Each structure stands twice: as C-alpha cells, then as structure tokens.
Image 1 (tube, rainbow, N blue to C red):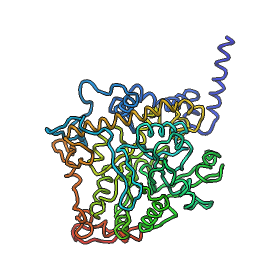
Image 2 (cartoon, helix red, strand yellow; image 1 turned 135 degrees about the vertical axis):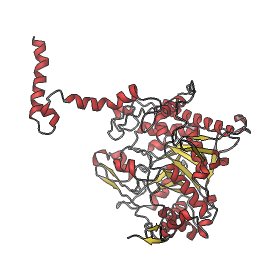
Image 3 (cartoon, rainbow, N blue to C red; image 1 turned 180 degrees about the vertical axis):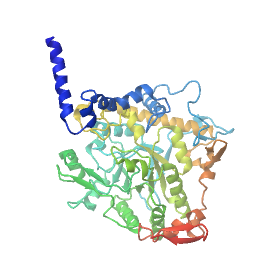
Image 4 (tube, rainbow, N blue to C red; image 1 turned 90 degrees about the horizontal axis):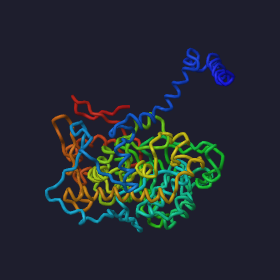
Length: 519
C-alpha cells in the first residue's frame, strides 16, 4: 500500500496542477489524461517512419531514397527485388530513354569530371559532377564537417563551406573547398559587417580553396536574412566568422557590397582578382525571372562572366526556415534550371559559364535528369547528410540531432566517428557516379556532356507523355539579343542592367495583346 501510495500521490498532485494551470484547455478539462496527446505528438514522427510509411512514402525524402544512400555509403547490396515500387502511370513520372546502341559501361571513365573556369579565370578547377553542397559549421557539428571533408579528399570531389566561413574543421583533412561568401561576409568582414578585401584575399588564396561562391539567395529561404543567436555565438564560431562573441549577429537579406546587376558583376570580377584568378561564381534561387535576365544583360554589357552559377531549387533544405519560405517561395529546381540554361544560351554566353544544380539529388537518375536539363554538375546536401548517418529525425532546428550531424552538443556529436563516416561519404559518392555511368552507357553516351533534354520523358496526363525538350523548348543561341522568343519577351522588357527591380511590372491583357505596366 505504501509503495502504491508513493506512485499515486505524485499523479494526484500532477492532476491537480493540470486543473489549476491556465495555459492548456485540454489539461484543465481532462487532467493527467490529456498529457497523452503531447506524448503521442512527440512520438508520431518516429512511429510513422519506422512502422507505417512505405518505401515511396516519407517527406521530405522517401524511404526508398534514404535506403539507397545508406546502402551505397556502407557498400551493401543496392538491388531491389520483384520490380519497381513506383507507379509508372502517375502524373509526373519521368524516365531516361535507353538506346539500342548502348555501350559497355567499362568504356566510360568512372571519374566523371568537368572543368570550371571561364575565359577570365586563371586557375580553372577540374570538378566532379557530384559534390557536397553548402552546409556551414554551426549548422552542422564539427565532427560532421570533418567527416564530409575527409570524404571529399578520399573521393576527389569538392566540399562547399556554406556561408558560415572557413573553419579549421574544413581545412584539417585537406579536401578541396568551395568557399561560400554570404550577405554577412563571415570570415571576410570588417568591424561594421562590410566586405573586407584584405581578409578575403588572405583566405581565398589558401591552396585548398579551389573556388569562390557568392551566395545571393538559397532555395530553402530565398530573400530571407538569417540570425545567429547570442547563445550560439561561441568564442570559436565568433573567431571563424569575424564577429564579437556572445552577441546576436544578423545576416541581412541582401548584400551591402553591391546594389545592382552591374555592381554584382563588377564584384565577381573583384573577387576573382583578389583570389589570383580562381573560379568565382554566384548561387541563387530564381524568383522573378526578369531579375536574373537583368544579371544576364549586365554580363553582356560588361563582358564579364561568373565562372559558374549554382541554381538552388525552391525545394532546397536547411536546418531551420519559416514554413512559408520552405513551402511557398522560390522556383523549383527543374523549372529554374531550364530557365537559367535557356537565358544564358539566349544571351549567347552559355559557353563561358558552368551551371550547377542543387536540390534533392540522391541517385544516379537525379544526376542524369539535372545534367540533361541543363546543368554541368550537381551538388547534394541532404544526400551527403544521409551518408553521414542522418536518420531524418527532423530535429535539425532543435540542437538535438540524435546522430550528431546537425548539433553543437558535444554529448551528441561525439557519437559521429570521423574516420568511419568520412569513408561512407566517399563510398556514397563513388556508388552514385557508378550508377550514373551505368545510365549513360544504357543511353549510348560516353560522358554527361552528351546528355540533353531529348533523352528524358515525362508523363503529363494519364494518356500523354512529352519529351523534356517539348516541355522545356530550347532557345536559339543569341536570340535574346535580337529576336527573343515570345515566352521571354515581357521579362526581357522588364529587365534592366542597372537595377534588380524591374523597369516596370508588365503583363499582357489577352484581348488587346499590348503590354501593360502594373503599378
């Protein structure tokens, strides 16, 4: 009885507290019992993932794709029995057209690479067609950064630092780096938060920094600035980012070093000069089309080109973002990639610029699809996180990542063993490139550069399919300069090289067929 009393008494006290507390109606009306709701809410993601979801379910990444990443990272069997689990008659189903002139995969060099560096670049970089996308130290744990860079060194591919700056963890294992410069200029800023050429040059000229990426926006939250809370701004992170420790640091939504497309292009050239001619590119998520066309007009006017453009899809992931931005801002990768490729072709400058696709790339088909649509190479963030051991617990924004990938809690990230996980990142990369080579050989192609939109098909209705070049028609080289296609005419009229904002917001009234400016 006394033991029972020791159990029941605290429950009675908890029930009385629930009846008296003013914040939750359920607990006031159903004391003690209503707490089960919060318990089930907390357990719901795990119950769904481990017990209920099928291979093709799961968001944002299905179990099927998570499994293939794990299998390749661990070098386990990745074949599937009994045929496809995908509904091939659903709208949006896509496939690669194989060829009756297929070639032996052994005839293809498995180390698929392209050279990044335009006519104004003095130190071109030979890049793998699959690389690690931008993820900052601070967003990821120190052991995760170490493992990613170790994998990049073992596999011979590049590792994007993210906008949080160059940390010792990025440099320790000697993997090739793409240093990303964001609106906060972390790692190359003065006391006022403005760009500092001296500190930029000092770090940009490090041997392991192979390319510079100027981040305009990212797919997960385009047009949204970031905030580093004071409690997360440790002395170590503050030193890496060149900010005072223990203070709140704002990352603004726009750059202070330029305010127009012409200013952007001039800044790209300045960064290239300061880095002794290394490849310099820009990263952005496409919003209003006329704003990217304005950048194209600025390139043509100045005769200066970035060496690469990274196109981030609106479906891109991040550790934390408002739901409105995650779900409803930014153009998805497929449409954005085709638009960027067409725009550069239309301005007659595509041959000078490499295009990088970033967004939900986990398999060889994802690579092939984006390369066929217009990319030269691809970046993967969440694919690499899965290779590290991420289990999609969806706790990236809580500092409680159970696998130690997206946390700064030493009790958690100590569980991530750098030597083991670095090898897994390398194996995932190798396995994905091997699968890409297999697909290329089946299509009768010897290199990804031979891929184009005619190689892919998509179901657009229950009884109709279209080839990619029918869904995303090609444009004639240089046509934007003399006779632009009708579908781009209004945006080209809006675009101006001296301002990101359109000269006028134009629309077409169908019965008059005359462009009308809307205030």
